[in-house]
Structure formats: C-alpha cells, structure tokens
Amino acid sequence: MSTAADPLGTGPAVNVGAFQWPRSFWLVRHGQSAGNVARDAAEANGHTVIDIADRDMDVPLSELGAEQSRALGRWLGALPPDQRPDAFFFSPYVRARQTADLLLEAAGVERHSIGWHCDERLREKEFGILDRLTVHGIRQVHPALSEQRAHVGKFYFRPPGGESWCDVILRLRSFVDTLSRTHAGRRVVVVAHQVTVNCLRYLLESLDEAAILEIDRRGDVPNCGVTSYEAAPDGDHPRGMRLVRENFVVPLEQAGTPVTAEPDVPAAPKP
Image (cartoon, rainbow, N blue to C red; front, side):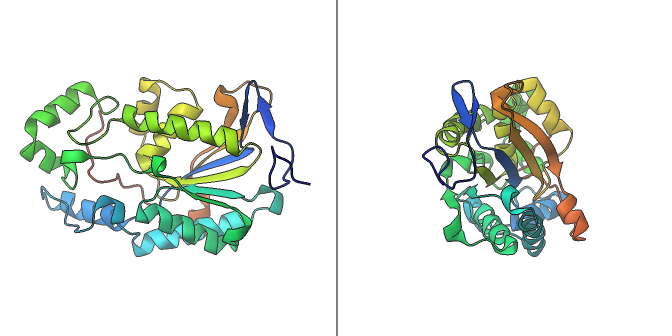
C-alpha cells in the first residue's frame, strides 16, 4: 500500500538524519548530440566558431546519440521490476529530453506509470559570450577572457552573460533539496549535461573544488554514461548517498554501441 512517504508503494523511505533520500539515484549524461559532432569538426579544422545554427537548448541528438540512449534504455528495462526507475527528471534542452524519451521507450515503461519531470535547474551550464566558440576561437576573439579563465579556473570563472560552476551548483542545491523532500524511497533517473552531472556529484559526495576538478581532469563524462548512488541508511556516507557506479558504460558496450565522451560546446582547456 502506498503512503505519503512512499507514493508508489515501493517500500519504506530511507531516513538519514533529518533527511530522506531516493533509494536509488542514476545520473545520466545525454546521448551524443549534433553539437558534439559539430564541435569536433570545428576543432579539427581550426575554426573559431562551431558551425551549428540551433540555439544550444535546441541542439538535438545525433543518430549515434539516439542509439546510445536506446542501448541504455534496454539495460534499464531488463533490471528486475523492483530495481527499475520509477521517476525521471530531465533538462529542458532538446538533447536531454530526447534522451529521456528514448530511455523510457526502450525500457518499455509507460510514461503514465512513473514520475516524469522536466526541470530547468538541470539545464546545461550557460556559456554566455563564449557560446559556439571553439577553444581556438575563445583565444582569438576574447584573449583577455581566455587568460582570466586560465588564472581563475573553471570552477569560479563566469563568462559575461554565462555561468560558473558555482552558479550551476547554486541552482542544483535547490534541486537536491526538492528531491529529498518529494522523492524519498524512490528510484530516480536524472538526464542532464556534463557540467550538471559533475556539479551534482560535488553536492552528493560533499566534494570541494580540488576534488571535483580532479574528477573532471580524469576525463569527460561519457554520453549515456551512468553515475549511480544508493541510499546509505547507516549515515556513513556524505548526504546519505553511497556511490555505486562512476561513468558506467557497460550497457552501451554490451550492445556494441560506440562510447563517446566529447565535451559540451564550447569546450575549454582543462586546467
């Protein structure tokens, strides 16, 4: 029987101190996008501007990105019923929404049977004046900003009209609070973007600047890669969530689907 704490009747919520948390939590980066492909071509040819007409929020998945999304969706659908997601949150950007749609379709899950939430707090980091510029383009068009970013570092650097990682973290604090209040005991998938995934990790694992930038330096988040957590009722883990998988791409590998890990646009040198 469902209760207020467990609206789907999936079992008791997990209490950690004064908070309640999802039972399982999957962070998923969207599938490869047309922007990822265009960025790679622009960088390879030494162009200053990425040749893509869409606004960043309107950039769709590539054909490979759709294939990656279906591969991960089939893996989710093959989980035992009591382990499958029962709630999805996704960024309003087209590539994230398409990924979530394809995950659900391939998993064979009816949308009316789960929680289905578009949340603007999960949107991509806003690049402001640097939007659509390659690394070469940023250096050529805005050399002073390129130098400032190298000095300040990506965690604190905010391009004019854009966001720093700290800005993204600030809006995600509100999202995490909402999640703890409304989805205790649930099995939640979040489909978002590379910086969003890393900034959520910063919050869920109680990291600092050095720790999250070290994770970022180790490599880009794979498209349709999964970083997952489980509730830790013993309270031994930060935020009450225990890291289970990091950038998990086995579902894609098992399906024979190429794994990609391109930075989002625009890219910038890793510090």
